Image 1: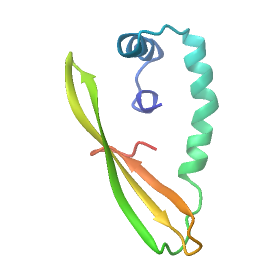
Image 2: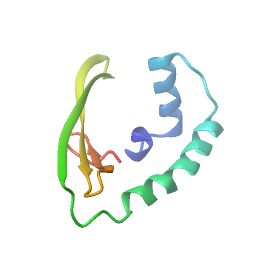
Image 3: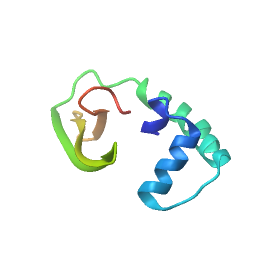
Image 4: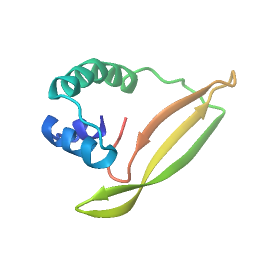
Length: 101
């Protein structure tokens, strides 16, 4: 989904899946998945948040990705809120430059 959101073509996504995971899927599968998931992501991004959170955590997960033939370290930052009833809510996810979800 992150590749699709960045404007990467279906064919490039297929190549990426094959290079990273050794799997082959059809362009139709990629289109069907993105067509099904994108509206759900948009809905989640635009959902109303609580007015007050008792606790807000900032965290990151670090992982390695292949870019231009080299393995580099990346981080996805998460903001998690705990509301007054004790329920956790992911408030957002970003890489260092842009919103991921």
